[in-house]
Amino acid sequence: MRKYCAGVMLMAGSWMAFGAGAVADPCTFQLYGTDSMMYMDAATGGKKVDKITIPGSCKAYTVHLRHAGTLPLAAMGHNWLLVDPVHFNDINSSAISAGTTGHYLPKDRTNLLAGSTMLLGGGANEPKDEKIAVDTSKLTKGKSYKGFCSFPGHFAMMSMEVVVQ
Ligand SMILES: [Cu+2]
Image (cartoon, rainbow, N blue to C red; front, top):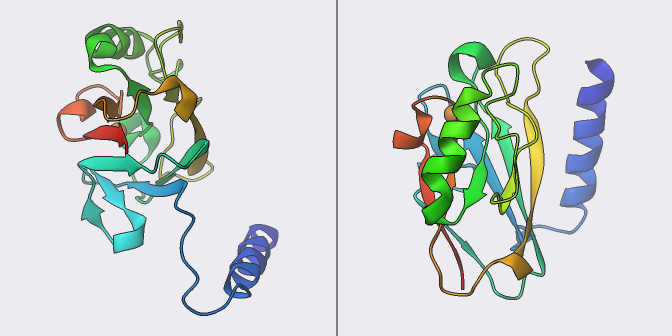
């Protein structure tokens, strides 16, 4: 734990070395999943996320999902999946049938445009964050995609529109 903290401080230090007013990477979204079953925008200090707009100039885009709470994954696990809305129902039901041991992730990822490889939790020794790569070449500019959490029932609260501008 001590080693981990030192690493984080070192990273923060090198980030700050870019200078005051350093702009956040436009091709990365820092997304928090909270104990109140919501996606929050880390950059705004906790604004609910209803939409992510990906700049068209981003060849690769990263959604850095972090569990910002303390509830264990069995009770309040979070992930992030990106789909074409026409595949939402299929993907969501196959994710739910995978159960906690399957991280509520669909076994068949064919129609998954991007997505978590694990369920994040806030409990001790549970994975707290994951960087999810989005291949923007798979997305059509201006089309509306759906990003959501496939933990049972969470999509009602944890769902967003994703658009490449
Ligand atoms: Cu969730």
